[in-house]
Length: 396
Figure (cartoon, rainbow, N blue to C red):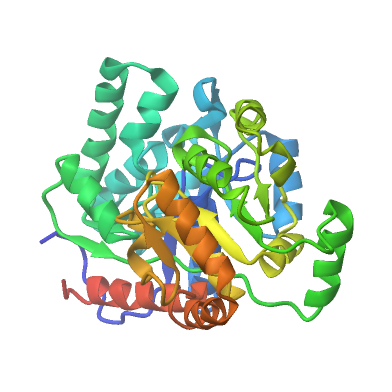
């Protein structure tokens, strides 16, 4: 069991959170940390440490997000456009770390490493939440087994020296085991801050007018990065099969380095007239309009450990079609609170057709989706706080 000073009073006084990427870069862990900060701050002193992207950028981000974070000194990394923090050179961070009662990192890079070391130095507990299949990402960016092996060795050293390891799904835990992690794993599933707005009909009307969807039946939706790991090719192949059977539109909200190639793919498959690429939507209130307007959310990724998007969709009673056996599909039951079929184009085409053809059954699935898949960030953080209490009181 990790050795650190046990607090008799379990109410947290000073919690430090960290993530090694931040806005303007989009990413699920950013959303997680922002919501942990929001709800933990109601009863605790909380510092969220994130990379600095330059003074002007940081100020603009702070103003737009309204999330009070500590920007740690960092340098630009050309691969992937990320920032590498230099926490040991940031004196302000060092002063904060001395006062921390608990360190919780949401990535195993520079800040995660710093947190693990600082926790041991000051006799405090450290937690790391594992969000991403890093090995796949390293290979995608470097195309080198050697580079990937070196980077995996580094992040595993951080994970192995952290006192407590959490993940967001059973699938994520299995991935950690595949990476060689042998310690205990706690699963704390993700949530969403999305709720149905009072001006729902007005938002739907805006989307209908702007994108020509007023009279469109069978609207499918995908929200996320337009990259190979999201497996959009599976959806496109299914829609080619589906096109002669029913009218539909697939709306893709998101941007990515492979956007151009995916546009070309829809042209080659003859479905370009049925697919609408709207780009990235940073206004989360307007993003709600797409969830409200859609009939079915499609998320074919096998890469994600626990995507936030299907949970967001569930807030609006929008069920998701997922790949059977994927980590994200763990929280849904096929035909009851969502849909899950094998990663095969014919299976996806058949499931989309059957789901959209039986509106009564779809309505029931929508209600179950809202009831059983939706989970608020407040509930998530309350669960995490209970675990913090156990750790700080000396209970495992």
